[in-house]
Length: 110
Length: 110
Image (cartoon, rainbow over all chains, first blue to last red; front, side, top):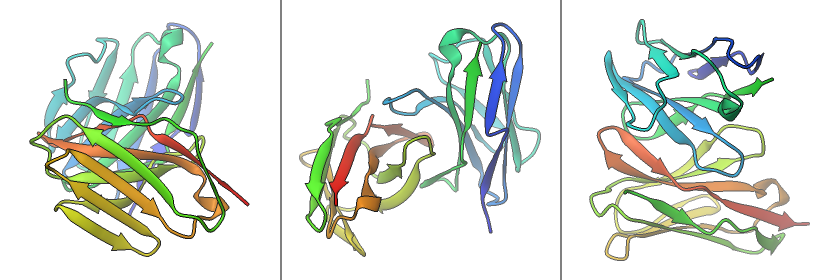
């Protein structure tokens, strides 16, 4: 089945220790997104790619970086995680239009 | 700032009743609107999309759009306990981006 896959599903890191989250898709969609979602809040867009074109939201902290080496894969790097970065990180794809989400990665920062 | 507003709830309805969820959006340029269901600890799942004024029905779900009033709603008929979740309203704001509301929590009592 065509899908969006995120790894790992749960990530525990220490304060300041870099972490990389990955996303892959078999939908062959042009657009890929990274969202951060905290409890009872709306998903907050961090970045999106249209093919290789990278778009960074103005309020995305410099601590967050992203890479998209090919159509299928996208990575989120958090260079120095702080306690405030603990959240669910959601990867989504679109054709564009409707967005389809992966299962998310729950990040815990100790 | 472009926004999607939803009543956070919780909205509680008895099993078999109609649940009515509403949202308003600020960007008059938005043309596409989406409803996502999100179970606790899970990622959002697309349940309806609507692009034209009026109603769109899919099984027990009906989405309604009124662009003049900048208002979108979702009706769930014959509500089931399995419908208990947070429902996110989202609006396409152009540039391949979508703005999400913070969601309305729905409880369906058996």
